[in-house]
Length: 125
Image: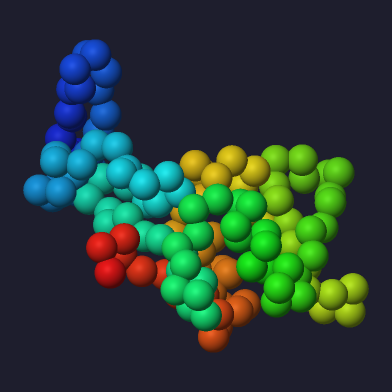
C-alpha cells in the first residue's frame, strides 16, 4: 500500500492513497451527504426551479413527487429508498436509506433522470 498514513487526535489512522493539500486539511465533510474521499470536493444537489439546496430526503421526496416520481417499496432492498417514474417506466432511482450516505454519484443519477430540474454544484456556488 502506498500513500500517507494520517493519525487523528484519537490515535486512529487512515491511509491517504493520493495525498493532496485538501486531504490533510479536510478530514470530515462539512455537509451531510457529500463526498468523503480525501481531497474530494463536497457537492450539493440543487432543485433548479426554486434554487433550493436539497438537505434531506423529505425535501427530495417532495420535489420528486412534484415531478411524478413515487416511492417504490421493495422488501428485498430494505436498506434503500427507491423511486420510480411510473408503472410503465423502467426509470428507477435508488438511494441509501441514510442521508449521510447520499453521495455525488446518487446526485448525478437524479440529475440524469431529471435534467432540467436538478443540478449538482459546489456548496459555495
